[in-house]
Length: 274
Length: 305
Image (cartoon, rainbow over all chains, first blue to last red; front, side, top):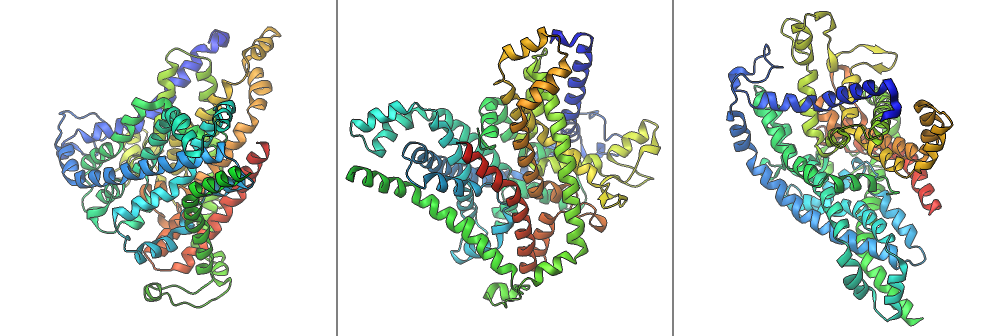
């Protein structure tokens, strides 16, 4: 820092102003959600509550709890299954390359960049035809399928860093694909699993487009859709809405706070080169 | 030799479910959407029955004569441009400062990056609260703040403004701010990862030669980070084309479509208006725009390997 000379204070000032900018929405969330409905007036909208109350949280919680449960039911199986698929795919694509395997990998990867609008109508038709349209199971299935590219990518890049001498030695000893995986690769995969699970958990929890098109009845809607619907209801109870937003954001924020390091690795993996 | 054949079959067997899934649900469905976009499939009855007629490129011709679509396309281009510039400028600046380890750099870094962990639906809700203009007599959000600070002349209509400079709708500024807020940390994380790979001696040598901080940035850091910056540009551009959630939750299409983007139009015309063919057309145009960005990027990445 010392070579900034007299600009050092300017740098700190910039960092501080940016901090205010990044925390502004957080301030709004907390200031509004701890207010009573009577206090959510326009006059005091930017002020902290004069009296802190959990009433808004109570109402948001009562309205959102079924949807929080839906999101958990959605996120857990789709995260775990797509992580397992990604691990196996990544392993084969990095350790058992064959002619055309890189092309297969590239074609799989393209799937994570497409705008999902371009597959949405056939997807809805397909889910209708197998009777999963409008259900959480349908949404779980969709997240597993469209999670394949990113999970495969993260695992493949992770396994690519494993010294090939290790695999070669095992191959010479006559170990097959599954043995090498279960004896060598799976046991060292925990960091990659953590990255993938955190990434998928966050993305699937936060996802909106699939959720809003595939679930139809309120009983099946995950939290993001329910939060958006909260805004659409008659009188806007901003305190309830902001409490709802906090409840929606809390699980992924906790994951970020606890596992930030791994979250960053997930972000970087998304830029392909990893 | 037999051994290799067997291993290859097992490899393919492990990959098979994923290859089939992506084959059908990505490529097959894209093909199907292209097909739909070439038909007159525009009502719920024919949707349920699957009856439709082939009309060639008519849906595309109509879209390019459709003011809402054209407005949305312009909006998306301006949104993309300023979003990329904003997220790059802020992200690179944050990365360079944090890389010099100021006091509390770890805290700063975590604060700048946390929006990436939050749903667009949450951010959209909060930023809508901030930018909702209210009315001149009873202002809300930022307008209320200006009013209370005694600067009522700064109040304006924010995302409901229909003011535009050429094809650039000023209302988009609100969405650009929200998106920059959410994604600057992304550029920062990519840049920081790159900066940590630049050898310390290189910077040290430049410093001994009397290079200023700014010269080190423009002559060494920025050129060395060109590839990472280009990746960031491409990824941010593709995110801006897909930013359905943020716009849908925060502003919707807005008065006179000032904040509309094709992704929102596609959703509304398909699932609210049952215009499946038109929606399919929009989504294929979106896909082509994403493809123009992403395919060369992927090809290039694999060639380097």
